Length: 337
Ligand code: ATP
Ligand code: MG
Ligand code: FE
Image 1 (cartoon, protein in one colour):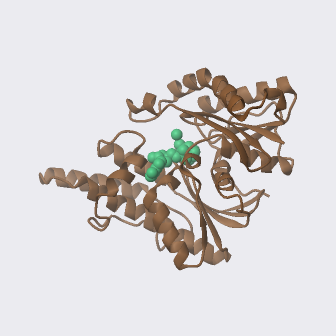
Image 2 (spheres, rainbow, N blue to C red):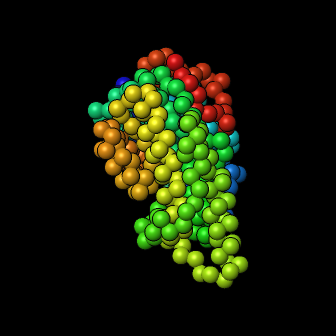
Image 3 (cartoon, rainbow, N blue to C red):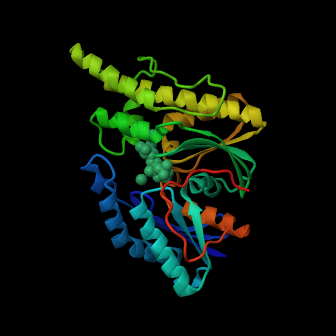
């Protein structure tokens, strides 16, 4: 069974071909990061227009690289939310047109579920049940994955997402978009214990997160130093900020695993590419006898391979869409099954 995946929710136009649930034949990603960088963030209107130009060439390249023809494809999986409405609509429209023309099934995929499923492509042996810590540009959540089509939301962020905090802190420090990888790099030269930034909700006894206070604390610190004419050590700020984010993520993930008695933890979303988060989670997992998985770098951030994988498993349970499928920009991570 060949699944074509299409992703266009933000600033990556991507297409991938997957055989069965786990054999990736191609994974093409056309990123718009250099285009949006000069604006310091994603400009939605520009993103939509670039998706329109890129979507069919990216699909063609995914087919060519996989060595298959469009007529060989059995089903099409596409991200229908969450994301930027104009950006999502491009992928959804292209997928609907292709599914209609080829007379094959269409599968509307939740982008966040896709991030979780990236792990199945990196670890062939991984099977549910497991706990997923989703840390992306727009979301931070703990999800109990009971089965391929059965999820329970444990808790999420009340305000900013972890990735959003990385991007905003980087921005006030004058680093280019996207800020996550920049903070990651800078933090390697800094002392994570240099500044005591707040760990919000770390002892709240639930699985909710909050990162907007941390972002303000970093901003206030930078302003206070400036007022006092003190040169800030940017590496220390980056490392201390990152340490605060990571500490909360790990504490809550471990607590959720204890409560549910799970032995496997998977990391998902763009922030999963953070080297310190990976290292610290791996160490915490080892200490607690937990099996730990995270996607390969290229599968952490937005891609269509994860969408094809999610679509494949969703279809096994009859999770198809009709040609009225529409973009749902505010789609969240909800309980499923
Ligand atoms: P969502 O998936 O919630 O809709 P998105 O698709 O924009 O949002 P992702 O592609 O999952 O987000 O991830 C992008 C985010 O990951 C950005 O916030 C980026 O700064 C962050 N990120 C990428 N690499 C790293 C890194 N090495 N360290 C920390 N953050 C990172
Ligand atoms: Mg992106
Ligand atoms: Fe994403």
